[in-house]
Length: 535
Image 1: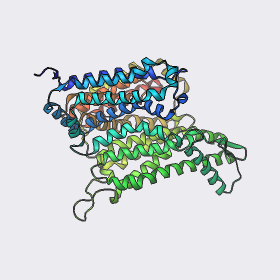
Image 2 (image 1 turned 30 degrees about the horizontal axis):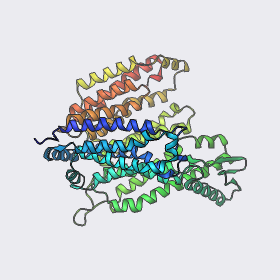
Image 3 (image 1 turned 180 degrees about the vertical axis):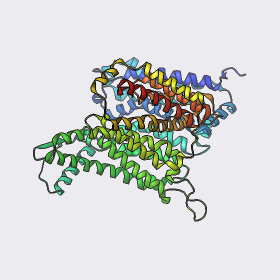
């Protein structure tokens, strides 16, 4: 072997890359954290300073996108492994190039104090940018040679480079588009003017202070703040449409979907937000100020935007115009929405989560609205009954024993404070029946289909996939499952147990029945103790 060439397994190169990236990112963040001595708002080139501060986040998101794409599209990972095996041994040049870039990047921080750097930032900026470029290039060449990168990124299709570029540009786009929202920004002012127009068209006498963005009727007035601009709804619609595009990318016509439907959906979300604000102001002036205030401070807006997104996606899924047709006059042959196993795993869970945001709008004590949540869960499962009938629901003794163990763990870790709920008195029989129906029968089906049959399955891949993918899927699905429960540790352990049952058979039946049995035991204990805080 020629001197200066390095032969290192792919796992070693990735480990070195990750350790170096984390250490350098933490170092740069600590050295450039805004203090009283340095702030981008005080430098002569504010935009450039802010842009450079987002670069570490952009690089991190780009790397995250590449990692996620390799998890969800296994052929990318297989292609990468193939290229690393066929690539010639690499020299130490990439490492030297990276260290040179890092030295240039940190040189101004060694040369100037923070007040001096603030005053001379325009002179130091070229060193920052050159150092960042060289450091990034060296790190990339450390993982793959230049020709191998070109082959990996562009050898199959544009999905991987587009995802990487999109995630890289996301913080930059948010930073550059900041003028749209915020105090006295375009979108906030536009929302204020639109609300005033809607109220005036309704024939009401509107009082407003445009400079402070205060608008009202009679004695009730509100201030149109940043949170009322509609940006959150537009972002939510964007996320939902992006997820659908990823799931349906095999048949979806991306041109009409993004060029025509996406702007229309975003515009509708903003108009819906304007109407929501106008209606709440009218309610505050004519019905109940407290009701209007609660409406502003609740999740009603998120609920409306979610319903809009679901409506748009339902139309897309059932319109042949947005999907590629098969050869000949017949339309696409994909299953209808109700028979689609993929959507049967996801949509009932989303409806279940939305129901949790709806009950606080109606009941002072959200738990009192659990019968409504049961109705929403039943609706979600009924909509996808044709798809649910295709799943394998069988289970065995090991699944049932696991369910009992999870119940014992949950009861053993129950906080003593929960016992105080017994003093509040037992709910009425109808509520208890609904709670048992939802807890024992409905929630296990919905949660297991989403967390295990979708999240875990998507990350783990097929039975022949690399073992680390199954471990990653088990960890991610268990942590997400734990996030829904007050007791994170017990929730994570329960999620891991259900996940192992799913990986054992790759069918949801075992995990679902274990979850049902665990919840049934816990519900019985709650009923016996009169402590419904356990469930």
